[in-house]
Image 1: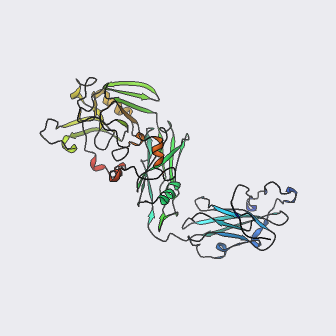
Image 2: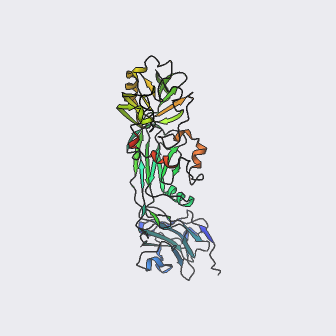
Image 3: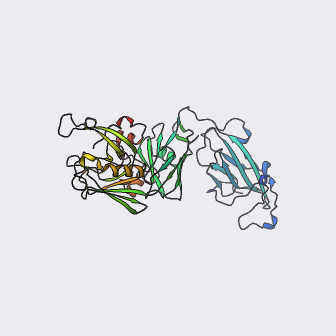
Length: 429
């Protein structure tokens, strides 16, 4: 017999284990009349080095299970680590050898289930376990998901902050495969590498309303690059509320609010005057502050100039870290609905600002149209993620595209709210 192995990917023709008391099943072509409902113990039919050696199995060595001399063969192998992750492998076409094809998870225990059959087609089974070696370095890649647990608007992206930079395309692909985001109701989304330590996840469209979104990391023990292995990370669960979207029409001086597609309120406003034009595009509400002392010096306007200010502001809803808000502006009442006189913010009556403040939540959308100002940055000044087309967004994935950063550079770290606390007193009225 020619025992030269011709490998094939293991597909679903899986034999259930005797330890579970289940009857065996077989692929077509086998005479079911020869099959026993009680598979024999295949211990004498297979050879598995990891089961013989009590030492942890080395991470750089693949697993290999072979059939001993005789007329039997291996029909299926499954190897699962302590977290429930399956190890990919290939079974030779003649059934004499199975070998793992994916990296082993470090510092974990694998349970291996081997299904066999003898020359008469009678099924056998064997269950084995072994431990893998710990990571060769104490340095571990950990993931911190954002935002904090809670309810958000349908525009809130999921963020992942890595504890160490990941730069190569292959390493980024490993990380991305291990970061899982699911939602109920289900939707399709993708990660985008903002830079080497920050990723954002969003769907093609906004999140479904009243959804439950979960982000988890399966990086624990996985080799990422060189001596860098993944560590344990805390999962995140958030929910969404109604689809609450406000549209600021700079040319028409209006602020129109929609809930679940239905217009519920139109408010006269005054936005940025020439030279201080309000940014166009889609922004995501970052936070709410019932009171902010706004000072022009924090945005580079010299004291004593005609544009300087130092005023108390109420009912302020922030949409950029550089200081753009939707807020009460009683001093511009005569211009609201008529002219644009602010330094970039969207000003409205105190009553209207308080109403909006009470209704809106972080993650809700503010879309600015008909503005002569610059477009909202995708990253670095809040969440401008939705200003990228879906095609461009996918190019930021290491799995769907190049996985390269957007060019946001060092400013991209500002997408992490913990990094930008010092910039919060930079409003522009």
